[in-house]
Length: 243
Image 1: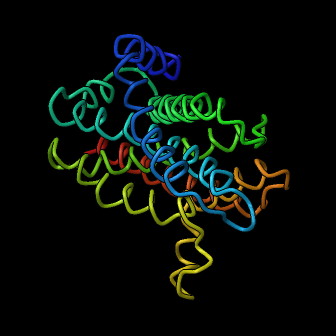
Image 2 (image 1 turned 135 degrees about the vertical axis):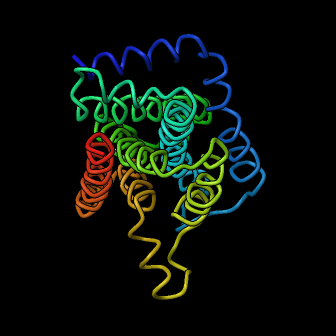
């Protein structure tokens, strides 16, 4: 019941700010597609660059959509509205509250990825996006929702949420196999970047889009991130309750 309550709150927020959320999900990906995809006429691995770019932008949209849906909202609720304190004294199981936040954030990320797919539909890239692609997008959203949840617990002020985006989300957006392949990066650095969740998501969605099976190690890495950050968020909130 607690999960449904949190999801209902997310749904009410989505309905209220539908146009703002949709426009925000469109602007950056549309700019990337126009500037990089249509402005740079080149190829990647013998294919049109758009075939490489579109899966990367879709993956990035699920990351930014899910992260922003949780990080800023939870920071405000915890620091100013004191909503987290109210949850702790309520009969709602805290694990349900956490799971509801993660699922709600991942659905927002999935929506952002779906918006990008609609934007690219008229381009006729002949790329394939199927149910497995959607599942990977959702899984990526859960990972970044969980990361956002942990960081929102660590935030000391409302301004920390934009800083987290600048420190974490922006670098990953450009480094993690989204706009350019990581194959040309220096050894060592390339392997570290390859272990980041967005790199794995971009790689798996790109493989499916081009008719190849996804690398199964990607699911393992994403699941590992989900377990690690999910555990941290549970430990944090239960520790705070017991203070």
